[in-house]
Image 1 (cartoon, helix red, strand yellow):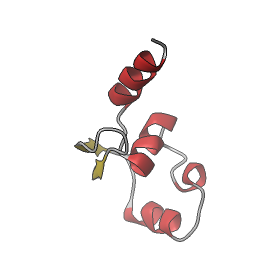
Image 2 (image 1 turned 45 degrees about the vertical axis):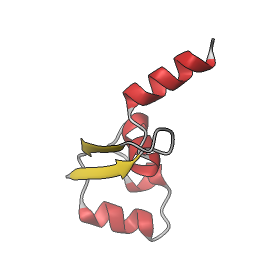
Image 3 (image 1 turned 30 degrees about the vertical axis):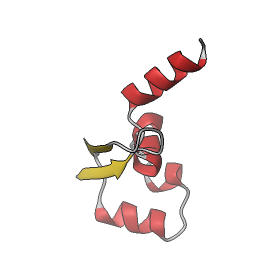
Image 4 (image 1 turned 180 degrees about the vertical axis):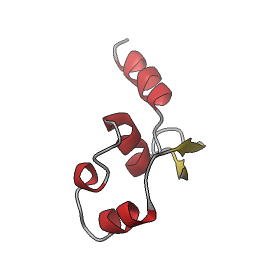
Length: 67
């Protein structure tokens, strides 16, 4: 399923194709923890779902934080 989110860091709108169902989304919005609602997603995909931050954006942000 294509999921579009606005990044909390850059405010850039990004879309990622995630292997999730509407039922999983409903479980999450109904109060399930993200790792329970989407056990098949890796942590970076779950982070994108919650915050809109892509793995590439995290890498850049963390690299800059080390400077």
